[in-house]
Amino acid sequence: MKPYTFYLAGLLTLGALGSCSDDDVLSGETDPRSSYFMPDEQDTSAEAELRRQFFAKEGSYLLFNDTLRYEPLGVDRYGETQYLLEKLDLDYVIGGVRSSKKYHFVFLNTDREKQDAVKFLQAYVLPHLSTRLRPYSWFVLKTLTEEFLNDLTELKTFAGERATAIAVGDISIATDEDKLSLSREIMTTVMGNILSGVDKPMTPFYEPGNGLYGNYFDYETDEDNMETLLQHGFLVRGLSIWSNAEANGIYPKQVQDVTSYVKLCLSSTPEEVHRQYADYPLVLKKFEIINTLIYQLGYIPE
Image (cartoon, rainbow, N blue to C red; front, side):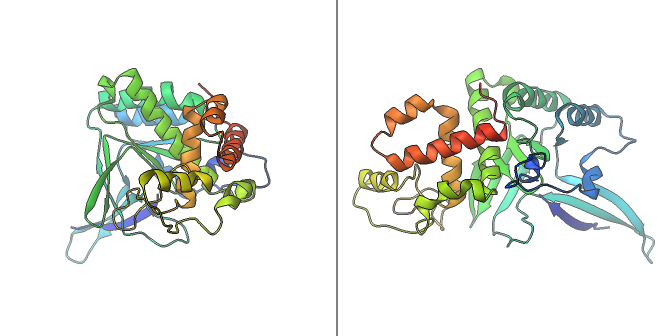
C-alpha cells in the first residue's frame, strides 16, 4: 500500500544561533519533532549507534537518508496496513514560496563510508564551528544534484531550514587538499546562510547594494562587467533565471553576495584582501563587516 507522505521542513540555520545572547539573533524554540531526527530506540545497528554518538558529542543530529518516519497508521477496510512516511524536504521554507527546484540524492551505502564521512566532519569542519554555528542536523550524502528547468547541477552543499546537506563523494580516498577544499565550501555555506538570516548586524553590508541586488546592467566586455561589479562592492556575477548559473550583466542577490564574502574570508588573509582590492573601497568595507561577524558568531580559524 502506498504510504501517506509528509515533508518536514528541511535546518535551523537561524536556530544554530539560538544560544547567542545578541538581541539581534533569533532564538530557536525546541521542536517536538526532534525525535524524528534520532534513530529508533530499538535500532541497534552500527549506523544508529554512530548517529547517537555524533549527537551526544557534537550537538547536531546526523542523517544518512531523507526518511524521518515510516510508521504504521492502522489497517484500512480492505485489510491493508496504511503507513505514515515523513521525509526531509530540503527546499522548504517556513512562510515562504516553494521553488521549482528538485533535489536528487545518492546515499552512502556502507557503514565504512558513513564512518569515514563523520571522521571528515570531525577533523576538517566541526573544529572550526562553535556550537552557535552548527546546524540542527547534518544530512550526509554521496552526491547531491539540483534539478532546475530540466538542467542538473552537482552540488557539494545546501543549507535548508532543518538540515545542511553535504555531498562527500568518495571521501575515504580524497586527498588532504580535496578535504580542505570541501570543508571550506561547507563552512562557507553554513555561515553564509546564517548571516543571510540576520537583519540588523548585516544592514551596513547590504547598504551599497540596495536597489542593485538581482538587477541587470549594461556592459561591453567581461573585464568591463567585472569592473562594474567590483566598483559597486560585488565579488561575483548574478545568476541567470534561465540556467541558474552565473552570467554577465546581472548583480548577485543578497545570499550570493554574503556567501562570496564568507568564502573570501576563509580563503584569504586580511592583508591579502587589502592588497588585491586596494582600488575598491566598498569591497574592503564589506569584507571587514563579514570578517568581524564570522568571528563574533564563533568561527574558529585554521
